[in-house]
Image: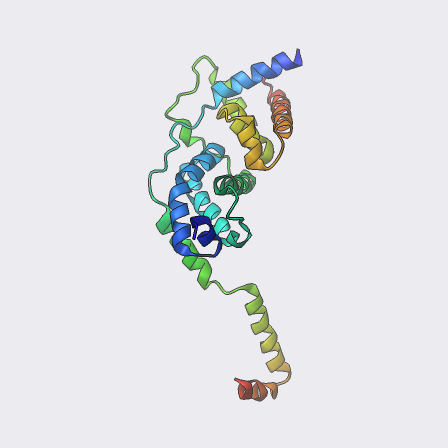
Length: 73
Length: 172
């Protein structure tokens, strides 16, 4: 009985929600892809931001280290 | 050097060739799952972004199409999980095929609404298997699970759908 009911429900589902009519891609997505690649390329990784924050804290607590860092640049 | 090898080494031209070759297939597969053309385009680009990032892990002797489809399936699944928290999924893409008039409108709306409330992984498998009538083998390949696992998910999706319909006072 349950299997029969399940089958009926499957049929109803098929009739209530129809398959996608048109699966064809209407435009080339490569330009969008290139934009995404460019955007991600210029994003600064979180580790870099963490290092900048660490240096800022270091300079604030020990201002003399600025001279040492500048000497090594 | 072969195209896939050049892609795995990060050559942008090789990636572009593969993108142009596979974008239509990836879009079609994602559209079957998310049923929204705008979202399917964005998710196609997201899929290829993930593919490009993971290029070093791709084995050039492997099947690029199958690998691509698996990534696209994960991207579409992530999308289903995120949109269900915000809004109901649109169903704009089946407008060309009118729903069966023999099915009462309230019953049809009830089924569609209950279907959208299914957990994303059940909704996705049931959409592909029952609505789009994709072969179980293809669904299993795209999800990286066995055919029996697909059948089990479809079975559970139908049972869950029945429960949700009962709660809505609909006895199909």
